[in-house]
Length: 432
Image (tube, rainbow, N blue to C red; front, top):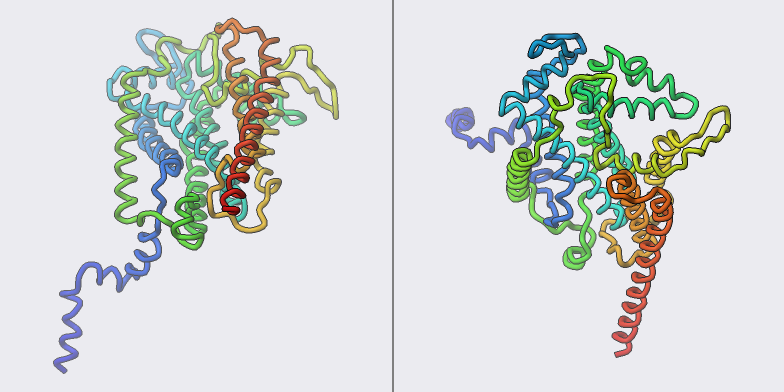
């Protein structure tokens, strides 16, 4: 009887961890997930920077949504009749905190896309898109594409002359999609551009639809990562082999590193936002017939440059549609690039699972192809500013062919020479 009384009293004095373990199997959860090893390598932080940028975008977006009015209805601002969306952004910018939050939101979007691209390049140059990571490669591509669309859908929301003109370019590109362009553009843009229903439609894209899709894909991306484990650097593989991960546990060491990185990232974004103002809405004013000169953000400059480089006389009737510079540069080219990236893990396959980062120097063909692509994108981005730089389009057309071929060829030759020297050194070492 005394023993039973002791057993009944035991829960009153058991530790908090024991209480959690009894109800949630806490010890098993901690051992399986919180003790997960994370490699400490600088290149691995690009994915985390993209994730943290998304978190900051959500937080600042919530604050901006409190004052934004997604409507084209005319309201009075400083004695003038202007769209409600434009007036709400101007009034937000007149408060120091509101302007700072909007600028942090702007720079966070740029940082998220930049970090995602650098993360993608790391995966490409180290061959980690191969078996068994093909699915996560595809999920990562979808995340990058959705991030770009999220940024584009936010272009329109200030509803000033600049943002309406920039969105109009997107509308005309959508109309240029072969066979279904008109129907697609009218569906995405809520009718013929510009239309009064366009603002609430893009607001729903920007704050509901795309963020939900991003959150779902980010969750899937992380779940696959946890299931397959992180990849290893060659030096870490030499120490622990391919069955283990050399790193620090998620809790508390990795969590502390992530907290420090998030704090530095947030502080840096506030500093940049204070030093570099963005998109002065009041300067451009509400939409009007006269349109300002508009260039897209840096991550879409290559498309703008491609549209410039394709000759204006190019116009071909084929398969019941017309192929012209607009749909070749704005639709066909990005579709081909995305298709190649999607097919990459199936074209460059690995028979056995790849868990170790492949040094770019040991894969001359893949590295050279990557260098060719980067060089081409840089030339196309340069073409977007040909008038400001005083470079003729003819010269840039030649450069778009020669520069990638030269840089790719030199990269391939130098890597093959280095590979031959390594093989020779290995043979000599074996002979000794």
